[in-house]
Length: 173
Length: 440
Image (cartoon, rainbow over all chains, first blue to last red; front, side, top):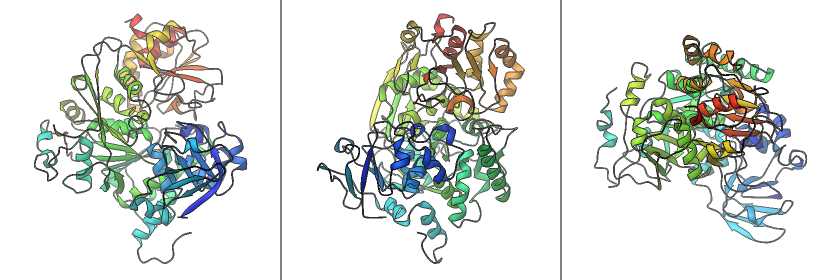
């Protein structure tokens, strides 16, 4: 897990549900590289074409509500987002993101801090989100130990692999 | 199978060191994690009693192998029930099904509900007794909450997490605070469990139970059947809840008699349990409700919307929320001898093959199809906008399902109104959103 992530900010509103992140018609696609072409396509069509690795997606309250589809965070991870930061998250999205190694940072007040296109910086261990374009910051509670371990391993797959095979060589990237 | 089992379990006895009572969720998670008691906020690792997957389980296969797992921790505790695309309507869906079949064979998973004995995964779990009081159950679908009606902690998870459960039999959970929803009084004619949960959603809103457990109780609950309790717990997902639960009682034990697949550990909440919030409604005066586009908490009295003559293009009677035999009978009582309004499609999709067969025996397939409805094979059907019954941008649907977000059933502009099965049936006949009390 990178201690600090920074990049261009993309903004969405409150209650952004998983149907809007990835529509039901794409659920038979498993390959994240294909999925990422359709992420947010009804909400912000430029996102899938223009978002770069390291960019930040900033949401309002209840980000990722709706279904259990892991397609949503998988597509965001395939884009290479540095983090998803929101005022609050729906619980399955939050778990799915962490389990895939994508930091989902709950920082109340963060949505009001940013306009689309701003530069943002998230200090994951220190617990701050800073707007580098306009100034201003919000604080958040850093991840508890258990979640940090998942993120540090790069996701739940690697964490479980290490637990099942403690003697096995090498950590996955 | 002891109706008084709630008083036998050690976890419900007094004398814990904390000195404070425990909620249903806390007791179940304490038992699952081998602790005497747990508190909200604590992270525990729980032993899973039942792990269910539908098509999304196919996405767990690669991470399962990447984890270096060789065998599923306990094939007797794993159920796979494919339900979203039945039979496969796309090549992609066919591939997911094939992956699951291969995995089930390779791992010797005996409880695979393949096409032919299929149904909506939650209904398959319920009608076959796969989740019992006291269980910690997980499923790859967000509406896994429905099984909390068994007095269990049933929680939806994603496929990577499911892979970890298959590999280890365990899951980490943050013990949630509990929101208690108390309902007292009698539901009047034409008012159903669906109206109660919509009313409660209007009250606590779509984020009102985020990360929380919901515990239902009250005299209304005592009188509700298991299918009605399934409807309630099912839509706690729309409140953001981690789990929705009803403490087990005589109804629960009767429902599970002869079908429970593993031993029960029934628990009841302590009288001095601590709740983060309590909401109390009296349902004596409750009217039929409807959730308007584009959120399940945009709830209004159905009669008000009916007065606005909202035209519909499609009526959908289906989904894990409301497509059980009791729901189909309620709708059939209204639809009997009637016809679907001109220009309207009425899609009826029973929640399982067993319910489909019961409909055949009771003449409901004939009743619905003679009136111009499409009676489909059992599946998630039109509920999720990825298989059949999709809507164009300008279309409006009256639905017994659980979500009406933009794009849920197809076009992002399409409008979905959520209501009881009886209201869906009358809306199909009238061609506009209608209040079932007018004909009952």
